[in-house]
Length: 185
Image (cartoon, rainbow, N blue to C red; front, side):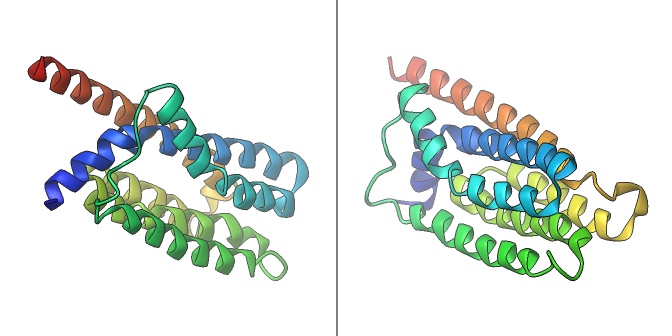
């Protein structure tokens, strides 16, 4: 399997990663609500544990809603997503360490961890739009650290960004799938 074939296979199986990005956006939206109504600790707990549900929920949506089969067992890029996710979890753990001494840093650092993990998705899915998504989410986190006007806005901004990008990725992937089906038929 070539890299191009592996990327195509992942885009097909995961609907361009759009559903997963949208589900992540919903987790960030719930986190934003919890952060502002229940505090940093509850918000972070929801982000962390809700984040664990992103993959199984997106897999379920891809199967039930979009009728997509799993990626090929021979796909060499399948594990790269897991590897990037493990690195992101390391970044989230680092953010967790700030809960006590500097809680205002928790969500900017979490955004940086999530944002930077999306850079790998360009290679896995063959979609340059992931570089822009990664850049925007990372910039939101960095901006919240250095720009006072952004303090407290990280979670809702990441949520909105992921929801928009997730929708765009899903629409692009379903349009590409319909085009491929029309060309095959």
